Image 1 (cartoon, rainbow, N blue to C red):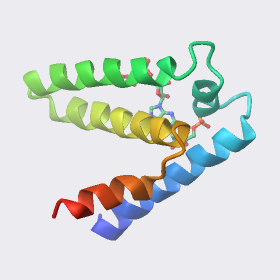
Image 2 (image 1 turned 30 degrees about the vertical axis):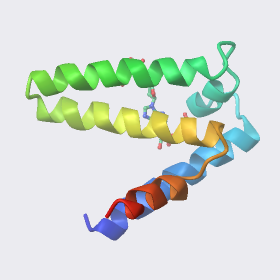
Image 3 (image 1 turned 180 degrees about the horizontal axis):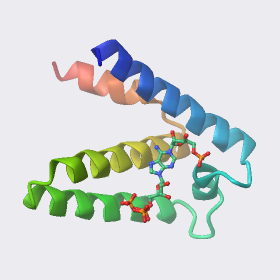
Image 4 (image 1 turned 60 degrees about the vertical axis):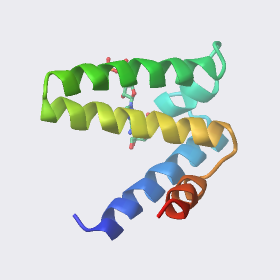
Length: 99
Ligand SMILES: N=c1c2ncn([C@@H]3O[C@H](COP(=O)(O)OP(=O)(O)OP(=O)(O)O)[C@@H](O)[C@H]3O)c2ncn1[C@@H]1O[C@H](COP(=O)(O)O)[C@@H](O)[C@H]1O
């Protein structure tokens, strides 16, 4: 996979998240995070849980699980950014400024 493909995947995923936020389909896990009775705590708790799972996977040197949990974190991070009316470009700009 090229860097451009990886970039495209993040943009596509963020675009789907924004669509779920706007349309709130009933069968969508993403939409359920936007409408959760716990409010933003639902996604914040998920970020905490997934981070703990990632740390355990790293301690076990379990590469497959590290990739799995990292993807869970990136997905929930993008949901949180959308919840806060930020964009994936805000993340990209912040990283670019650090080069
Ligand atoms: N990338 C993701 C994604 N990553 C994780 N998850 C969900 O996040 C939840 C993670 O919670 P848990 O850890 O409790 O799940 P689990 O299966 O018990 O545990 P793990 O094995 O995942 O650690 C699961 O329900 C996953 O399905 C995701 N749900 C959706 N997406 C993307 O969002 C798009 C839209 O999804 P919907 O909103 O469901 O239509 C999908 O096409 C995907 O591209």
